[in-house]
Image (cartoon, rainbow, N blue to C red; front, side, top):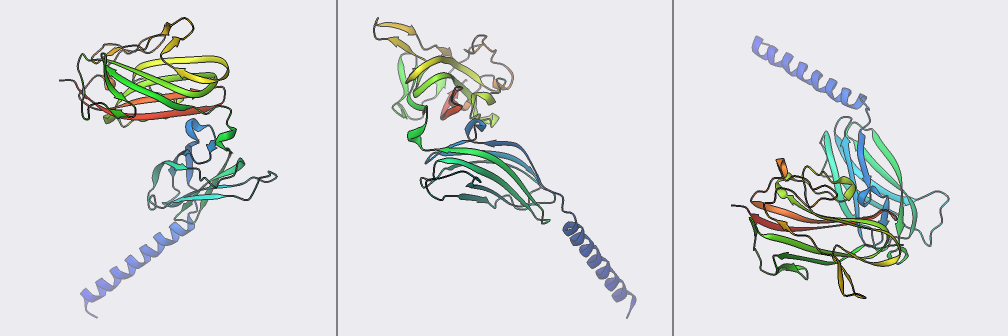
Length: 310
């Protein structure tokens, strides 16, 4: 064998040994993946409603690399149910990643059965290790909810002119302009006890989408309005506009916000509109966030609109 062939052979052997050692080290390292910042249910309330959207979030760090992420909703030992039911969701798109933020929404199936369940978060690693985190959730039939927050009214105006109503923009593509006087009315049905409503403007470029009033970062939002109800004994409609039919008097008017204002309408103290949330041309979210603190149920709604600040 000449020297060049001998050198190639030696190189091949060394590479093969290196690959074997690498494979053996991966196989031998059974470091568990980790799951942090876990949120189960809207506003992390560990509650699901049959036929409705369910929120799940977790930040995953693999021991080596992620293979698959699953959640399983399984009957809880000792609990009784009207009939058997369980559910599995699996996500393969994170395979091969070292880190991943799993932010998912899916509907609780209409075939689900009301009751208390184990909620299993399962992360399988390519090194063969498996992480399993167990939470507890309660699944409700909508008919059995103590309160059922539902957005029934959302109307936006520029001055006295309707801008958005009945689920659609009055003039498609029309943007809010600098110095426009903006106002909005929102109403939430089927609430009682204590609840709080925030109406926000958020620039889409910030890639920030809170889904609960508990997660609001006020450095990134312009508060159009904040209002709350307290100690309501029975279910009713809650709105940021209050009119007394008995006296025909307005109890609370909806506020105005000038596009370009120096401060927002946060209460009790307005926040300056500066820094990353300063007014700018671009696409914005108008956001409805409501939380019923008494029953730990939340609602959120996003609407996209444009602002021309030139």
